[in-house]
Length: 77
Image 1 (cartoon, helix red, strand yellow):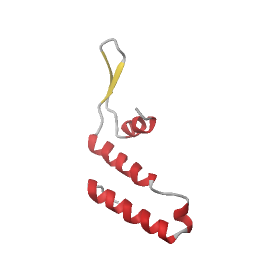
Image 2 (cartoon, helix red, strand yellow; image 1 turned 180 degrees about the vertical axis):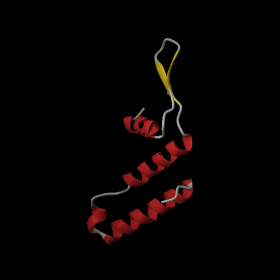
Image 3 (cartoon, rainbow, N blue to C red; image 1 turned 90 degrees about the vertical axis):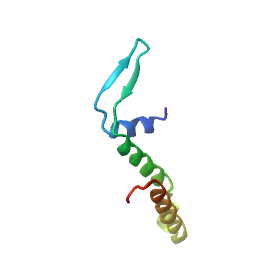
């Protein structure tokens, strides 16, 4: 699993971490809605480039696409 995804899962508020059997597989009890929101926000942030600082067109595209993603997943900005 991508380290960032695991980090977001931890930010979503693990209530417990348990070991399953002897294979040392960890499960995290998290707020799934919070995790999904964090994941969507991280996806939106990945659209930001340095060009957004200097180009009105790049900024406009970022804002358009981030709004589209947030609306698609029902995440409020």
